[in-house]
Length: 267
Image (cartoon, rainbow, N blue to C red; front, side):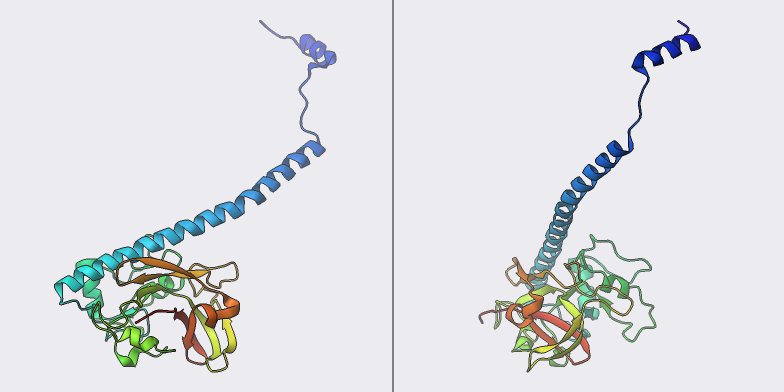
């Protein structure tokens, strides 16, 4: 059947011609989409945050299994990290422990993905620092995206606050401070702080605007962190930026890195 121009004009004149959206209708549709998106995005953000927290727990529990396997082979000792630097630069013994019991980790030319068990999935700063060249000041150490605490030397206890040093110089499982955590998220910032007066300033980005903490709020401050304990369980502790000493204690040197990690424990 062939439709002629005359047929088309007769149909159009009869009121059957197709109409497009009016401007008002289009604006209404856009407004509805915007409202739905506004309702959906917070839920998606919350779900993403929870997924990252769950993956972080999984990583830490794998650390816990590896630590117990190592202790079983080494008279209940933790891997030695007395040659480590600061809280996250791991020494040669820790690197061997990773290779033999967890996963081999080396410095890479690209950022490690969020599923790498050595790093918290929300850790950005240490993934960036991991890319530094081998000419950096500590070439024999490798970064992790957590704070590994036990079997260190007293010299590495530079962030000691309220007895935390006792956590990190313990060498064996099931000894003193066995209820203290062994691995924690990096609740870390930059700034100045007077521990005695409990006052100072903290910022949550480097000068290059790289976020320093993990599990971040929109302003970069940490929501909290996962803490792995000797028996293998992981607990989440909220961080209150307005009451740092009342939630997780603060350690650090004036004008340097500030690390939040103290929690109440029993010996």
